[in-house]
Structures are given as C-alpha cells and as structure tokens.
Length: 366
Image (cartoon, helix red, strand yellow):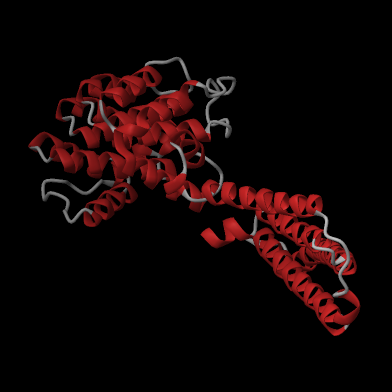
C-alpha cells in the first residue's frame, strides 16, 4: 500500500517530469545541443503518451470491470498500469533511437553554465516534491498535526496506520488532536448522522484511546455539549475507553432518552458503561433493553440486545444475571435466541432460571 501511495501520486509524477527536464537542460548546458533537444522531445512525448494512455486505460478499465463493487479502484489501477507501460515503451524507443544515431547527437558545442544550473534546479525541485510525498504517506515521519489529519481522513489503510502511530506517540500527541477538534467546522455538529462529521468522530475515538487528564477534560466538553446525539455518544464511548468512571452516571442517564436519534446512539452508551464496569447503572441499562413493539425483531433490537448482554455479563452480579434472564424470557422466541447466541459468543450460557417465553407473552409483545 505504501508503494502505491508513493509511486502512484501526482507529486511523484511531477518529480519524474522535473527529472526529465533537468536531464535535458544539463545535456544542453554541457554543450550537447542536439542531444538535449532530442531528450526534451522524447521526454515530452513520453509524458503526453502516458497521459493519453491513462485516460484510455481508465475508460477501458471501467468497461472491463463493469459496475460492481470496486469497479472504480480497478479502473484506476488499470489506468496507471497502462500509462506506465506506455511511458516505458515510448521512453525506451526514444533512447534507443538516440543510441542508434549517437554520432549525430554526441557532437559537442560550447558549454552553458546557466543551463546546467537550471537543470540542477529541476533536480532539486524533483527531490523536494518526492521527499514531501514520502513524508506525507509515511506516518512515522509526519508531525503530530499532519498525523491527526491523516488519522481522520478518507484513505482507510493510511488512516489506520496514522492512528497506530498517534497511539504509539501517546500523550505527546494529545494537544494536537485537541487542537484539531477545536478547529473543526461546527456547522454540521448539530445534525445527527450528517455524514460530514466523520473526522470529528475519529478524533474523539483517538482521544479516548490516548486517555489521560487532557483527553478526558476535552471529551467531557464534547459529551456535555449541545451537539447531535451521535457526537455526544461517541464522546461517551471515548470516555469509557479513557476510563473516566466519574462520567458513568451522566452516560447512563442518557439511556432514558427515547428519541429516534438517542435510541440509535444507545449502542455507544452501553459500550461505554461496559468499559467502565459501571455496576451502579444497572437500572438504566435494564430500561434501555425494554423494547417497543415496532422495535421487536429488527436489526436495531438485535444489536442493542448484544451490547446490553455484554454489559450484564461484564458486571457478573446476581442482579445483572436476573436481568439477562428477564430479557430472554419476556418477548418472543427470537429474542431468547439472540440472548443465547450472544452468551455463547462470550463463553457463557443462559441461567436455568430463565423461562421460555409463552405464546401469550409472545402475542402481547406483538
């Protein structure tokens, strides 16, 4: 993935063009006028052919890949491959022609130091462009501020590597993550699941993983804010990751919220309480696991049962197991099956005291 991010990038392509130009100018500066002109023509032709081949490859790649998942990526890879092959063939053909006619091109005239300096300047520009791209795609070389941006960016593999590097830097990275959060665009933070708050959500999660007093103080601000439930719930889970036990009562209280937005955010709240091992919040968790008829049998209900059971098993108290039994026995048979499946995944089993839902109970739940 690193080679793809580095080699198949605009800065490296620009660096290659700069190198070609530098070679041509150095040849001209050394007095090889015909050779310099021939190299310039060859390099320009190579660049033009590769650009045309890229677009042809993209069109052909889309036609071959169809419209299935990953078609766009396949088309781009095909385009770069065809552009690379076309460039190599054109460049090799041009150099071969120059070698074949070398007596014509190796005739030497007067030197021009100025042209040599221009050629060396192109080499410096090429080196700088390639070096900047190398740093840009190598998390270990990025400053914390750049690393924070990459850790919340759209490039999945690079985002994961940048996150790992941030976590490896520990508390030294916290101020930059906080600064990035505080400078975030706030226009969509009040809109639930706007699709534009992804960077903020990633950065909140990173703060939770980093932990420490600074992280907890910042996360509390976001949790206690008036932002959308998904923002606040993510901050709550991050507080759970950071081990902020003092926030457990406030997190649990939000489980009593029954709006659509908060119900969809209960997953994060339950996970936070599980991470905090908040045994005193059992009543709120039990309340969250009481479903309305329109929630029965939905993927939402199944997922929420899973989070709730994980909390109850983590608490591992008689009261918690009594709630497990109640959740399994009140409702239809599908709810019991969900509870049993979650418990099996956790290496536990349903207590014998949990009764089987009766037909009457199932009918009432419907």
